[in-house]
Length: 423
Ligand code: S3P
Image (cartoon, rainbow, N blue to C red):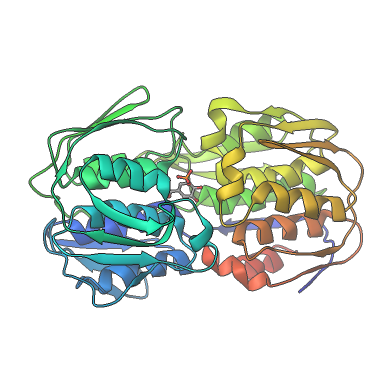
């Protein structure tokens, strides 16, 4: 795909539904008693993988024009899949499903694409085994994962990394355990599972970094409105901030505090972002308006990292256009995402002439020198592809992006929306 630098981006848009919430809506809807109507569902490939896995376990899921309807089978109503549950590129499907499958009275096998087969699963296997689960993985750390029926009991588990996928896998297994399940996080990660549990009547309490779940008798279906994904809005927030003359409004974006670190960082960098039309429900939502403004470098590390983990590639792009040095640290988790996102962004930013240095747990970007176009590689990673598209739009001269279709993992209409805005 060719990308040419563009003039100001102007207009009002919405972004597709939140990926994390869409996955959880299908999973918990399937385990609930009753019917769940999901609006705003993300029709990206990852969430379709989740639907596919639950259909293989006997759950009726209808994909309509405006909603997805899940006929819940109850906590103990899933049936044994006849084949491997294929999770595609989706870490969230793989890890959360592992927690659910650990508590079933049937055996199952989980696996995904080449990227999923390289992602660490030992972090999920270990606590689930402590709960009594019977799981085998390749080299005890990789897919395919084989799960066998077993009785679970609640544990208290201190997470080695702030990971919502790991936390959620343990809490989902906790639904099937005897006694309480307690998870202690090093720093708060996204809390969509806990919020949705509460909405469905599950007793789950959060005290600081500690989450305690009481195993429920059952889950009661509720309708779920999925807000726009702040991780998708992030590309437009950065494009609007760095492309001169831009002014964009992104409506209906989820701004759960465990996800909104990008707003804090971009504002620290000098971005002009205004929140309007705030509404608070199971998940807080608002409209975000961004205007172009000069940015400057900042230090990003510590407890904010899990609040913006998926936005770091595009924050690195913002840093390339910011005056001075941006240091990203405590972000080693980026190495085990859909690609090694530190290595990927450092390599691609260098191609654009950006002064950037890879570190053990992040990168240092010395910005302010106008980046130029280049021939970019996506590493088959949706967020790398969209971050590079923003870089290419704001750079000097044309660029090429290989395999741009990978964006359909989380944002099928991304390039259409960019073009509509003037990109
Ligand atoms: C997710 C959690 C995060 C995030 C991923 C989605 C989730 O991963 O990077 O895109 O839905 O729970 P980790 O749990 O590995 O940090």
